Image 1 (cartoon, rainbow, N blue to C red):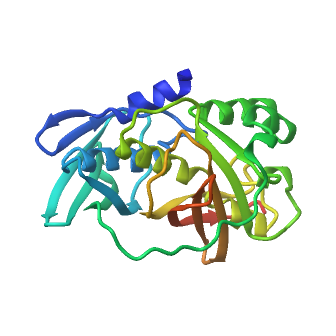
Image 2 (cartoon, rainbow, N blue to C red; image 1 turned 45 degrees about the horizontal axis):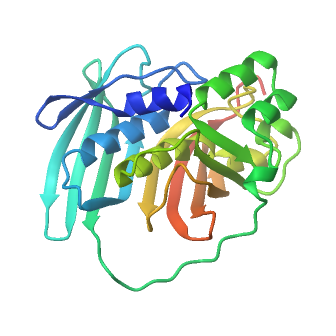
Length: 288
């Protein structure tokens, strides 16, 4: 296990400070605010710790309300909305400096047999043939930006199937992108942990397809400014976040200073594991 993954697992190991109250630390991301995927993953950890182990997360719906302060802890308050025979619902509010910065609703379900179907996995290159972040990012970004981005993503082995937005600035192309990802090290056999790690990664690249449609490089090069607004995930089938997962992403729309990304995450053997939708602020700086 790498140092980066160790640090991330420490961030997800929340301190319980009272019944239904948890506290988490945070760290800076590429921009001077808490990375949204970290807050979402920590909130899901908090919710999951109030749920019986035999109930697995099957969906979450979240809103990013305020930018998080990386220099202050985050308190997560869990509201036990419902404990039914098959489903359990939790609501979590993340608070910093006395104000809510994030709101999440999550649903958990006991294991059941039922109808089965899924869309086929799209074609994608073998992840082992693709360059690592340490190999790709310095080709397209200034040295200091590449280094900071590599450090921010040190817990994850994330490989682009094609040139990322900052590698094709000024060249609009199809509003679709693919990345393979897995954690940089093995994880314990805890289904909640794997779901939380996938939640963490899901906020890293989902709006890339919005940028590609307009030939914008994104936050790494500063030709757009933006932030996540809301995020929804559905967990369809078991998966491991320490094994390769294909994140197939596209953007059907951008308007009003907002961009929509939608995606499906497949296991390497073709099982549809997760569906994701996110809307974010995507604004062109005034100087443009």
